[in-house]
Length: 249
Ligand code: PGA
Image (cartoon, rainbow, N blue to C red; front, side, top):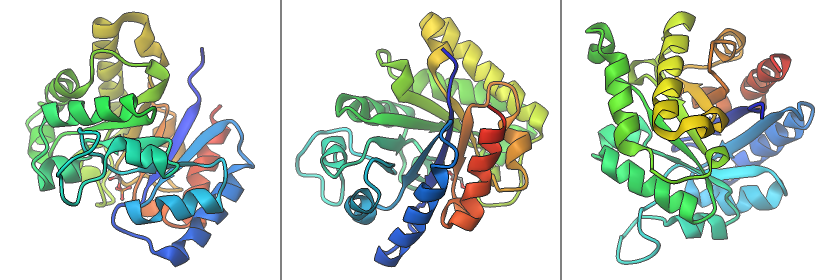
């Protein structure tokens, strides 16, 4: 089965009620590109409003707790995301691994919680700059994959996002060759562990993707889409990335 292109916007801690209009513009424009799966992950506060404003659109959370309920002040459980109308969740973003101390085991538990709640999961991995410079990026990321990818899952509902930390929000991007080498290594590790179903898993690239570089990055070997931060907040910036993915089909 051919993997469909997947372009996901991560709004991070951006967006208020007025931003719903931007989401509507993005989802409306995305209907021009039916061959691409498009999703937006706004802050938790906007999920319900975005789902209501764009019926049928794929809206997701940026994190979830590994437990289904309980005394965890400030956290949101995966079944709550589903209840709010979300259909996906991002787990293991480097801003949470680094900023909130999440380890591979935590990320794996969150991925299992998301899958258990019926959500699709985007599981993020990626190396810091010093690891890239020392030549250890592939080993580092494959260790994250080994530690954070669950054992049992529906391959069409678990995507991996490779996001080199030094490329996030910086305007720096790896070479197309480095992206292809990393994605090939990730696919190889997943195939070694899970066999043929690894072929159904989508591998996204993330880190300073924009309308200018998307065509080249999305065309790299084993890249099935993009996880986009800064350039996902408006239709003017995000739709060209969706169009670039559509052109590659
Ligand atoms: P960026 O963020 O596109 O702003 O670099 C990507 C991400 O962190 O998902």
